[in-house]
Length: 118
Image 1 (cartoon, rainbow, N blue to C red):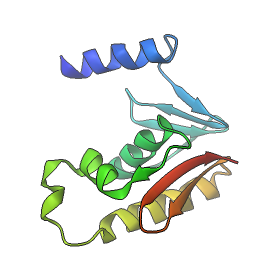
Image 2 (spheres, rainbow, N blue to C red):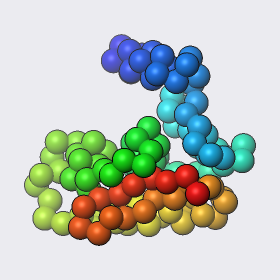
Image 3 (tube, helix red, strand yellow):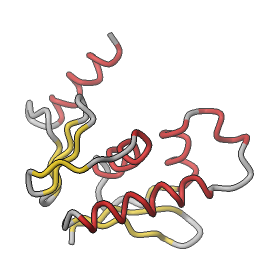
């Protein structure tokens, strides 16, 4: 039920669309699908969650703690480093670049990440 409520809210915010589109990247959050130039790209669940979190907040600086908590949950405060985030971001960037996506995830040293339209 919560998922349905979130879906209705998301569609209302996106003028009734199921997809979120930034540049040539289209994300379907209900089906966990990502398309670049209408070609699907394979992302694991965490990569998808990171991309979705960033794509609905374009050009906003997202603190790495906030990103980690939103994607991995409340138990994130028990970790001592963020190497797992760095690895997921690296893989996500590589997949987006290989698909010729015109969005880019940039790091802001010591703070977090921003998603830009190239």
